[in-house]
Amino acid sequence: MVFFLRGGGPPQELRQSRILLGTVVEISVWEDAEGLAREAVQAAFAEMARIEALMSPHVPDSDVARLSRAAEGLEVAPETAAVLALGLDIARRSDGAFDLTLARLKELWDLEAQNPRVPRSEELAAALEGIGPQALRLEGTRVYKAHPTLAVDLGGIAKGYAVDRAASVLEQAGIADASINAGGDLRLLGRRGERPWRIGIRHPRDAEEILTILDVSDRAVVTSGDYERFFEKDGQRYHHIFDPRTGFPSTATQSVTLVADSAMLADALATAVFVLGPRQGLEFLAAFPQAEALVVDADGQVHATAGMAELQR
Image 1: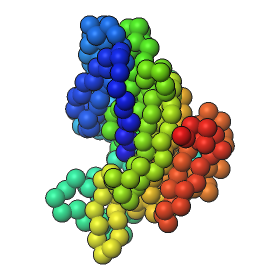
Image 2: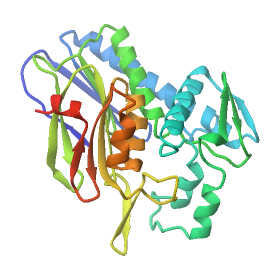
Image 3: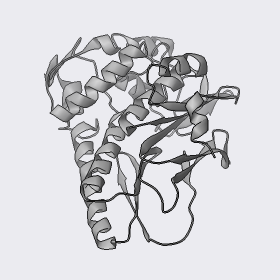
């Protein structure tokens, strides 16, 4: 979770929010011409709704829902193919720590249930059978599945793509300074008045404590944490970021904050680093020189890339 640290003063800041992509999306525009800003913000929301209709597993005729129902594969929209391509690339480069094929596993855990439970070992084994980046093949805009029951979930990357698309809509409308926040996936354009956008990163074990403050312009910031959706049983926390190698929630990390040039990339990298843990995760990030990360491990110790210090206040 992130907090905007706000200050007063002109020009006027316009803020609007909508429920999209299963979360609250807030767009803030730092702009004198309020009429232009309102129109641009509405267009940005409409673009995010379009991406949701295209890639949400909960929309029956979306590319993702149709692909999960398909026996072998099908043709998808070029945008969906591009998101799949990046997701599969990150999945392979992270040795499967980021995975687009965990839909059945997420259904099994069902963290939204009134009384969630820990699945039995045989249930987990069945949900993990045949998953991984090798189970999907992309040829142009046609996607092939290794077996009929494979289900796809772009939740770890499509929200970031929608945020990036909204940012593009704002830029095309002439908006230079704005922020888009989709449940912790942030894209920050320009500045907030006389200074960069100031982002407070919450402590993963204390919602009232700010772990650090980042000054960011023209980049994306994504935070993934084990405090977002979870239940506890017998003193163990079971959250929504699953390790594809075990079928259980990853235990190496409490939270990851990832800064990158796009929200889509930051979204995928944050999940991969969370699952890999601080040591392997930061080693993995060395292949992405445009990305910076701050990782809180299972013991509450903070690890960070060298470049993160330049963003911290």
